[in-house]
Amino acid sequence: MPRVRRASLPVEASRRLREATARLGGEIREMRLRRGWTQAELGRRAGIGRMVVSRAERGVSRLDVEALERIGLAFGRRLTLTFGRDPIDGPADAGHLALQELVLRLGRQAGYRTGFELPTKPADPWRSADVALRDDRSRRLVIAECWNTIGDIGAAARSSMRKLAEAEDVAVGWWGTDPSSVHVVWVVRATARNRRLVATYPEVFAARLPGSSATWVRALRHGTPPPVEPGLVWCDVSATRIVAWRRS
Image (cartoon, rainbow, N blue to C red; front, side, top):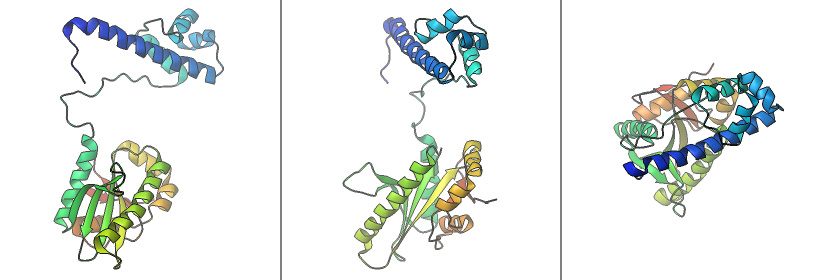
């Protein structure tokens, strides 16, 4: 992000504040209308005046943090105030890179040839697999999808299945039509959010990733044959080791 000169700081700060105020005002109005509340009703629930709500929705009032917190509580939503990414911090995808680094290291130690962001469709370079583990002797290709945070479960599952199909074409390009196998495993950071997500939808994950997690851990650590079916393994939060997903 370009550095803002000291002389232009007030101007830039004012511009950003106007944009944020307008965005918040629109969001407040949408939430209020979804609930069928009047401005007076929202003001009553938030403990602020109706005119304060009106000005906030029109983006003409610079609400303080306490007023925003009150409005958030009235809607049952948490107010989150954060700075953008620090430009002198590490890569924006540092968490994801740490997972990839771990899988690449495990794969190399297990005897695989490793690949980072393997293009699964050369015509579309942006379509790639997070990590590819290649064993030419057994003509085996393992695609590891690394998940720092799982967002849309359905989209993630469809993406993995698409990459699996595309990786099968890649395998044919490497080894010809001789028998070969392509496998997919999810390596998921074991955050409280991700664990809660998997625990909330266990049948969904079991149906899409039925391969034995313990067998997958051995395959990634030691290079033993992986399950035919896709699977899921946990990675600890610090991205130093993988453990099996123990289904309830």
